[in-house]
Length: 107
Image 1 (cartoon, rainbow, N blue to C red):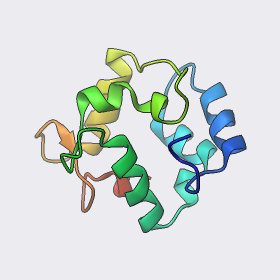
Image 2 (cartoon, rainbow, N blue to C red; image 1 turned 180 degrees about the vertical axis):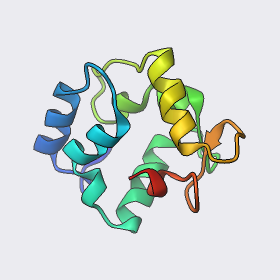
Image 3 (tube, rainbow, N blue to C red; image 1 turned 120 degrees about the horizontal axis):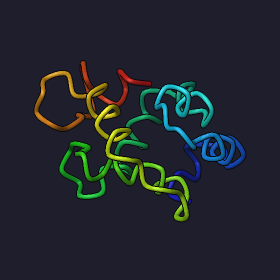
Image 4 (cartoon, rainbow, N blue to C red; image 1 turned 60 degrees about the horizontal axis):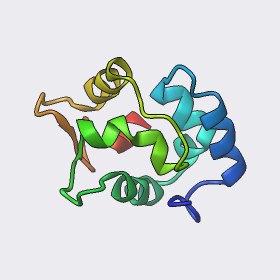
């Protein structure tokens, strides 16, 4: 698993099992990400940022759950846009690693 050493496998499984209707706040809490340090969240960000651009873009968010389990479903367009909207404070279509509108501010 890509998150080994960052998140507990049992918590991730529980979060994925509850992901029929994706809510990032509930997922972050269930997976244990909400209780992690800033460094842990930055490590998670780097895993989700598949193209290493320094930002998480819409196509990376769509496949967000697959970072936790290869067999996980893709987010729907509606879920992806809601997730992006929650983290994209400046309207540039991406989520940064630090500051307002970052993954850390969402957790």
